[in-house]
Length: 325
Image (cartoon, rainbow, N blue to C red; front, side, top):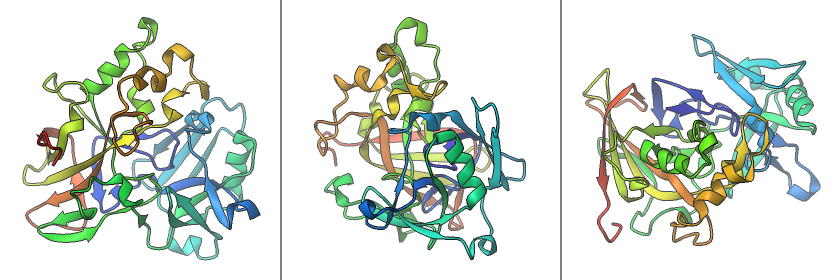
């Protein structure tokens, strides 16, 4: 499992996670933005790894108490790291400037984390940026219905028949992204032999990477409608993930995460996969690989608003019918 505290930076790989109405706790609760200009109609423009490959040089780490987030630029000769709260206290943000951030057409409030943090990122990126924490209600609306199959009327979380609207923080279009080891290996086989030892899955930026133990074909997740996940620590605790659509991918697949630039042409996964992975009927000209965009439902004996995912022993996919229903 992977958590991305700052959108488009390198993730934390975790053995346990808390799942909330907006996805994994702490996931994409920070975003880097360019300050608003007249051309952006008052909106702060978020920056992502699909356009700024150098974001892959920023690694993240948390302390044992999960209270401090350390961000480190792996190639910096000076001003290499900065430490910020993983979750800022509301009191510390009371006088902070707020920005409106639009991602895929839905907006959220971003609370500015101050000058020192801005100077750190601006120094390494070479232009002025601000780091924002999710403000307001701590969530934003899911982008429009174009991302949903027609037979789903709404995106929602179900907890013992009680439905809540699904929401996001600063993720693009879904609270979770799924990948599988079968699909990972297919992508790896497309690389030149000398590059097949690369940890390619990190370029796909999933939250949940499912080990299919050779029991699924590559891209078998295209047909999943529901994934049932049980905790290793508590077998009574189960989270069901409804897989709604196959996610359109971008040029982040071509990022060289060790150098912060475009990877060599023969290792560019976007092109290597494009010949046969344009499979989302909503976007017939766009590349769709490996990922599903899910909605979550927690099935617990006494469900809280959150559920915890511990090391997983049972993942049971339920396939769609041939009609895709």
